[in-house]
Amino acid sequence: MNFKCLIVDDEPLARKLIRSHVSKIDGLELTGECSDAIESSNFLRNHQVDLIFLDIQMPEIDGLQFVGALKNPPAVIFTTAFRDFALEAFELDVIDYLLKPISFERLLKAVNKFFERKSTSSPKRVELGDESFIYLKADRKMHKIDVGDITYIESMDEYVKVHLQNKVLVTRENISTLQSKLGDGAFVRIHRSYIIASKFVSSVSADGVEIGGKLLPFGRAFKLSALARLGIRPK
Image (cartoon, helix red, strand yellow):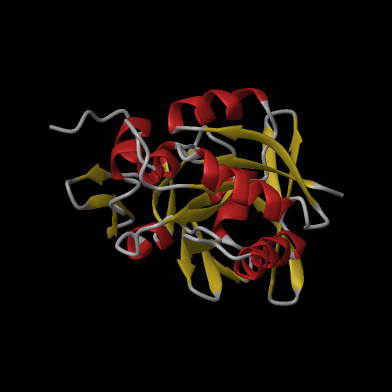
């Protein structure tokens, strides 16, 4: 199985170098190249992409803003000449952050991280009529979870807490993998570490959203898109 990847960079020479590196890696298939975020947004609407090699400093919309605005982004490896954005980048749960000029060995290490993430078991979503549920591995067994019972999901580095209305399940699933299984409609990513079910939100402030008496903070890269998904126009 080949994973499809996209290169997004406004520098032709940078795209050429990454293209050369990708051509040497079994399991990756280059499906396109784009020079800016707008072009790549149009590309993603019409093509399957599993992994993006993404520059940060680009015209009009930078790479950080672009990823934060995507509802269900593919996996991302940032490729940039600037060290300054690393902390903000990792808040977006990216695979890696590579500094130019990028050696083949360094890019291969990042791609192997992507392969490792993809190889981990992911929850399976099943829909029957109006019902929707996922199977989630926790406590050495597979739990059948009604998606409508999920209030929010919390990433805790090496594991993830799935908060239900009446209990909490702890799993080693990746939060981005869970997000892709839940779909776009009822759930909103508000932070690198939080996905919330919009129907359980009791209030929204400049700092975050409140669910069940707990304030869950906005991440800087997610705030604008999260407010838009919640139907709130920032002042």
